[in-house]
Image (cartoon, rainbow, N blue to C red; front, side, top):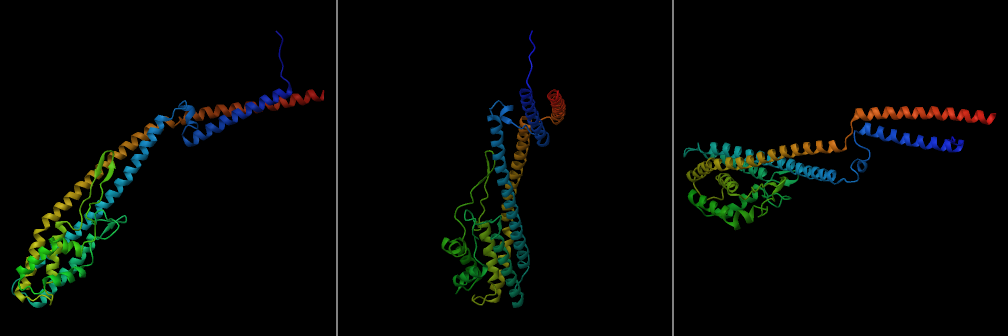
Length: 335
């Protein structure tokens, strides 16, 4: 058999080619060892990345659900804080009003009315609250506040109550005005007639937050506070005993409305619970999908490190051969 030989030029080219191949392998392995991920996913999956793409799509959708759920959770937290402020104000003022008697002095009436005016402003401020730039109680008009200032409300009511001479007449007029679309809604309410759209917080699950500042539970609170706030108003042509009757009647109304406020808070609490459950499911699903993705794209770091050592040894061996070959070629040339 005739032996074959490789010329110096061909040998040099072969060594350079092999050197480039080994360096490329080392670079790829070093990249995989550093990142923990396969460098070329198409090679790993034979060009079919559909399963991995499906996982990535599901993770993107879960991320959107998580953002929506966190925003909904912050929104409901703010609503609960607003409800707590409203209920606390109504309870405090209501409790102070029901203890008044016919022996109550004019100064005490004025003090009670002043407290009611302050409480009215507090409740309106709570109903005008926002979370993340969205109004809590304005319905679909989430970029606007739902109620005008307390003084505008009281100013409108003074005109409605002019000439009435008894607490009963005033209370009836107040109830009619707050229920009349041309009264409260046209004068004070600036929110939307439509509820805030439901938010999708998980696959197939939405949460709806439908409470608005024009709901009966809030209108009643505002009505009783406004009644008490006007009890000492000189525009009312009623005597002292009727003014006291307005205050005690408003106090009873505020306390009786407490149950409706608690039920509203419980309704929001149920929504908070659903949001928390959805967030937990989203987190569990995301964890499962991330594990599945990692199983597809990750590399065994120990195995990769071992292969990198082998490639480095090959590279060192190639360098040794290259150096020895170069020396032999020079010796042959000198001979």
